[in-house]
Image (cartoon, rainbow, N blue to C red; front, side):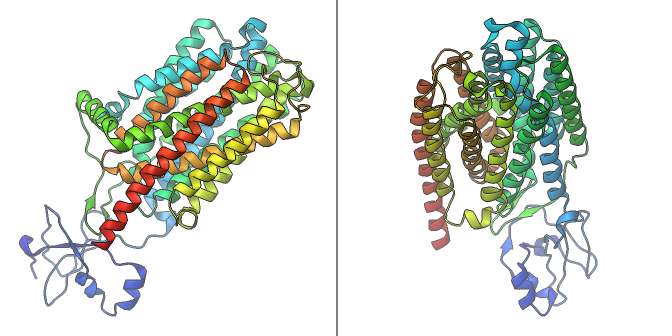
Length: 507
């Protein structure tokens, strides 16, 4: 039996409920056909194409072709395995880097002296500025070398930056900050593309939430080690610093090695009811990638979402660098205040994991009314947290060791609880931003994620610079204003696309 190419058609694979209702497996050809430019020809009644993820079925009375996604157990699904490896590699790599960034300011103050009380802010500001600029070129680099090797190259930059702290110098500190900023741009753009390639509309919320939970657990392990190893010491001696950063260096190397196990490319045809979605084509022209990013930035949706991106950058600076340092500089917490910086990272991670589980992995249940309620929830959590911090932490604590009281007597338990709330609110925003970008800008995910990280990192850099000069109350005011605007802009874009989807459904 021969099926000519002009008679070949491609159909979406039926759902489990449709299969149960079908007595004859060949009846799957009755489903809605899809367009495909290059239809294969078949010479036998049942032929399996080269891809292990496609099934060809020929009906005897009217030969036609059905290309379908077979039912695969999750532990054998190469795409799901990639998501797990992605999460574990980032968990190990950022267990080192998140701890490094969180304790960086107090470590440098202990090494260089009191005059370096804000040196960590300056270093991180340079890092995020380089990150933001490099984001314009990262889509081209990722399109050139692929997302897997883009993440490997970026991960190597993180490892080198951590090695700088074994014996820091001003020159190597700032050079390392620039290097890891460039590496971070490539790493995160590649991560966004890799996540999109290994997801579809039905799995994007689950996969982004799973990745976010694994990634944010990185706050727990490195910081937990720092808390117990320091053991309430009032200062960080050279030997303690060396041991801490050797452990962090090993963790980052483990994360880098896991990236070599990524399976890319995964040859799979992702089929929806009206299109065949394949992996984005590579572009060898850097100007094309940059021009595509600029064109996207001019769009109304991206301009509005840029306000949301900016807020995530401001609050990322606050929870990842400023607030932990403020706890470490609050003398009323006693000698344990340096160790508390590590504990603050642990609770930020717990909040992030909780948010990832609630709004990502369980996304099908929590997102049934849209993404906007989750973002509104995160915004309300942050508003409450900012007010509690305003009452509990001395206003000059972000800048230097502070002996002053706040509106209430500084409470260490309340301070650590606010870390959990900061992490929970941040996860609420980021899981939904990832989900929205993966759905709305799927056709050009590299440029979309590059723009997200560009705006976020530039604002984070600016926040680190003003954090070295502004008292706490003014930093909280900036967060309040930007949070309000960012939440409104996100909800507007979400409502607009929800209305478009409803209109398409009715038509």
